[in-house]
Image (tube, rainbow, N blue to C red; front, side, top):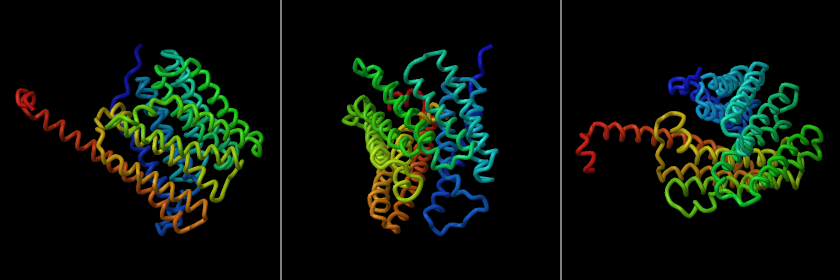
Length: 375
C-alpha cells in the first residue's frame, strides 16, 4: 500500500505550533533581557533555549522532512515537536514536554531511515546525525543534565542538519576528496559533542575544533562563494549563508580557545552566535525555498527581505562585541531587543510576501488568457 501524502490541511496546524513556540520563545527572551514585560505563571525563562531550538527549529526541520518523505504518518514527528514546545510553555521543563521532544527525534530518525532506502549518501547521513544529536540532547535532559550542559548536542543538531543540506547542493562541484573531508569534519563535531558529556573540561575544546572544521568545509565548498556575485534570491541566500558561517566560526573559536562555559557573558555570546547568527540566518534565507514546498504557497524574493537580515546581524554584533565583550548591560539589553525585532520583522515580511503573491496570482487568474499573454 502506498503511503498517503501529507496534505496542506494537515501541515498548517503543525506549522502553527512551531510558530507558537517561536513567539513564546521570543517572549521568554524579553524576560531574560530584563525588559518590563508581564511575567507569565509558567517559568518561560527556563525553557527559552529548548523552546527555540527544538520547539521551533525542530518542528520546521521535521515538517520539511515529513513533506519530503510524502507519508502522512511522518507528520507525527513535527507534531510531537510542536506539542512538546506547547507543553514547555504551559508547564515549564516538565516530564511531558521533554518526553514529547524526545519522541519527535525518534520519529525523525525513522523518517531518515525511510529516506535512506531511497537515496543513501553523506548528505542524508549528516542530517540523520543531526536528528541523533537532538535525541541525545533530550535524553541527557531527561537524565538530569541542565540545559547549558546539553548545548553542544543542540548545536550539533542544527549544524549537522544545515551542513547536510548544503552538501546536497555542493555535490556536483566538490573536489575529489570533498566528501571525505566532510565526513571527517562531521565526525570531529560528533566526537566533540560526545566528549562534552563525558569529560566536560576537555570536551569543549574538542567540540570547538570540530565546529571549526565543519565551518572550514562549508566555507571552502559551499556554492555561496560563487552565488554571492549573482543577483536576486541567489545573492540574498549567499549573503545570509556566509555571514552565518562567520558567526559560527567565531563560536567555534570561543569553544576551542576558551573551553567550557555554562553561564555569564561568554555563554550568552556563544549561544547567540550559533542560534541567532547562524541558525536564524539560515532560516531567513532558506524560507523562500522551503516554505513554498511545505505550504504550497509562493514566498517570492523581495529586496526588502534584506532589512530584517541586516538588522539581525547588526544587533547581534552590537550585543556580542559591546554588550557581552565589554559588559555594557544597557547596550546588551537593547541589542537583544533588536534581535527579537529582527526575527519578528522577518516573519512580517514573509507574511506580506506570501499575501502579495497570493493576490497577484488571483489577479492573474482573473485576467482572460489572451490579455495575460499580451502582458
